Length: 81
Image (cartoon, rainbow, N blue to C red):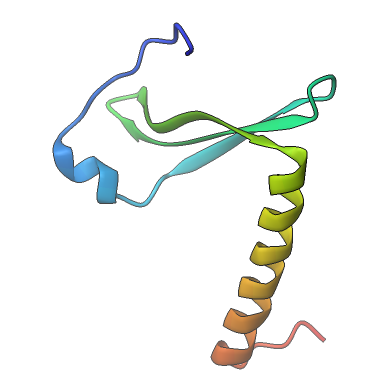
């Protein structure tokens, strides 16, 4: 577990839409860490911090995101072509 200080906010924050995200890559461990958060009074408040995703799950996650984006594109009728 990280020793990072986490700033807590009202309970409703968990249902908020994050204002930013960060990705960290560990090439030795072949993992990616994800952080999602929002800003309040010029301070960063982390909603979900340092979720580590290993390589096999990353492949599934990326494939799933690509499929979901393709489906959203079909539904909205948008074409990038």
